[in-house]
Amino acid sequence: MAGMRALGRTIALLAALSGAAIAVCGTATAAPARVRPAHPVPAAIPHDGVWQPPQHADWMWELGQPLVTSNSLLMGTGVTAYNGDRAPRDNPVIYDIDAIQNSAATVAALHRRGDHVICYIEVGTAGNYYTAAQEGIRTTYYAQLMAAGDLGRKLPGYAERFININAPSAVSIIKSMIARQCARKGFDAVETDLDETFDNNEGPTGFTITKAGEEAYLTTLARYMHSLGLGWIAKNLDDTGRTSFVRRMEPLAQGIVSEQCNQYQTCWLLRPFLAAHKWIGNAEYAPQTAARFCLRDNPAGINGVLFNANLDGGRKPCR
Image (cartoon, helix red, strand yellow):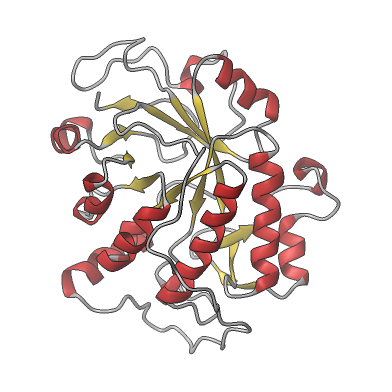
């Protein structure tokens, strides 16, 4: 459900280099969307009372299992950074953890340490990973989306299906997940994975999802998060190779998580976030090494970390 999106990254790189629209060879004609978004997308929205991560802040991304605050490997503490910084100076102060696997008690424990906590969810695909009991609801989010007819084709490489983000029913279900799993548990912000599925960027969805539709969807979600006192941490907007998309979404977001922007040479697309002095968390994986990308991330103001692809503990931060 998380980790590297190598297919999407490869497609994005080709699109960025060629200037062509992103497409997947052999894709069948997409079915018409059931409902087209009708919400205008503002250039910016007020963020009063919403946590804004400092531009330079160490972070830990742990999605492979529930976070255990007494486990230094899962917490990413006690390591030496590429630039020579040592604990506690380079210990994480931001934790990005799974919304379902982690409890309100875990979030509260991190807050007692003085840390901030990001709630990881997927807003463009859904997988049948959890029971209703694990989600604390009567019917799983996946089952709700399936019953509403809002799930399309499978996401390549994952046991997930694309969500019809144009459908009001899908928006309502995702909002309910944000409220229950993120706001109610006391998280500070929400990371929205698979928030760039327009134009088949991550593979053929089975729906007609346009850039304008994606922008309207993310604007609606950002407004809702902010109304709940939650920040929005965007995800992999640079995957698309579309500078206009990144520029359009940046004013709405408090920060962004990018994967492999050095490996696939898309870090330049994050310039709107850098210009606004916003937090950027960059995750790189093998075969990249800290020596290869930290020399670029550190002076750029990007919080680069070498993670294992399973995101199940351990980190090698740039600073």
